[in-house]
Length: 89
Image (cartoon, rainbow, N blue to C red; front, side):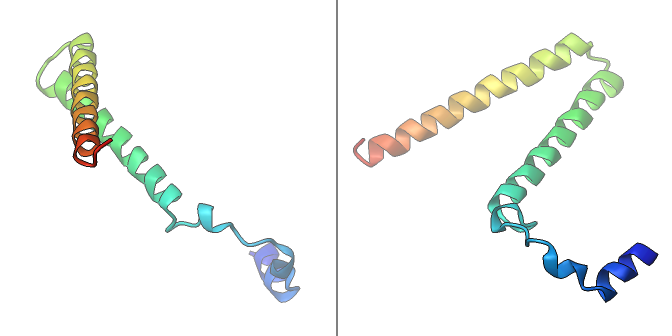
């Protein structure tokens, strides 16, 4: 507490370089990182639900998430190609 008060009173904060807008809490980069962390938590909870509540073996849960990853990549690829074809590329 004393160090913080001295930091303010001695105006040491003036010598610190501000955080770049790229790394600010509301930047696109940090929002994306937050979304990735939330996705990882959702996957963790989903894995726990599949293995603990439904009794699916761990390898089965991994297979489900692996297939979901492949399917989402397929859908995103098809959507990307559809928009590219619509734009004449």
